[in-house]
Amino acid sequence: MRMGKCGCGCGSTCIQILGCNNAGPIAGVGVTIKTSSSGTVVFSGTTNANGEVCGTISATGTFWMILTAPSPSSYPANLYTYTTGQNQYLVKDSTTAYALPVASGYFCCPGFPNPLPQTIYITVCSTTLTLTAAAASGTSFAWAIALPGYVDITSAGVAVDNGTCSWSGYPATTTGTTTLSIGIYCPTSTGALTGLATTTYLGHFNSVTQSYDAFALDPTSCSSNGVCHATPVSFSGSIGSSISMTGTMPSTCAASCFPGITAPPMPCAGDSMTLTN
Image (cartoon, rainbow, N blue to C red; front, side, top):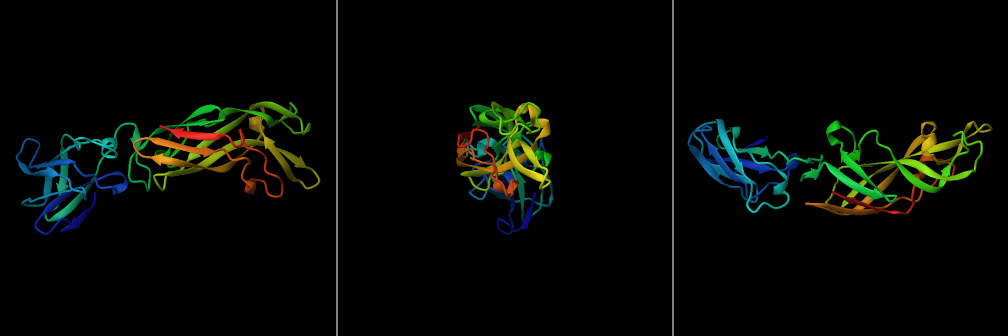
């Protein structure tokens, strides 16, 4: 809640209805201010383009506020909930901002003005993964695969293992499964998303240099012996009343993860990826 002196003209008291992160004023919301839940109406109206309804109160205090959704209700107004009545503190001759709670199944992502679905789906490597909202837990991602976070992905011809998970049989190439997880950051625009694709690798330790000089995708059977590396991924499309976005799985892991050696391939390198809700 925020208040501004004479925000809607001196002599008037205003309530401003806002969306996520106190952004995106919501127009068309019916606002009724009463002396109490069973009292008389002090003022009422429909929010303007600035999300405001203004009237006159005799003194600063607590009033009863009723909010009605715009009719017809369209995006993004249809992704919020509206109160049938609650106490609201108003300051005479000032503007008080009220952020609408989001509808069930949605959440507010820091820096983005409209609600986003708590669950989205990514199809990659011929597999559909479920990503759940993680912002509330304080992580850097808006969405991530629910814990434990890793999903087996079939990676023909790229998983390397000699049966002991120690690389001594390199380059024995097998067809098997490796692991992949996806995390996606809060959007900064309505047409783009970025994130990280994380997979697990087996390393070949060079006793001469006393360092790992090569890596390859880690089969599921050896995942506990591997190390995790993450590669940036990006999506483009639309984020609105629905999410419809596409991207491409990077061909190799981020080179910065493997200084001095050729970065190994990602699972299903070059495959298309889709995001929907």
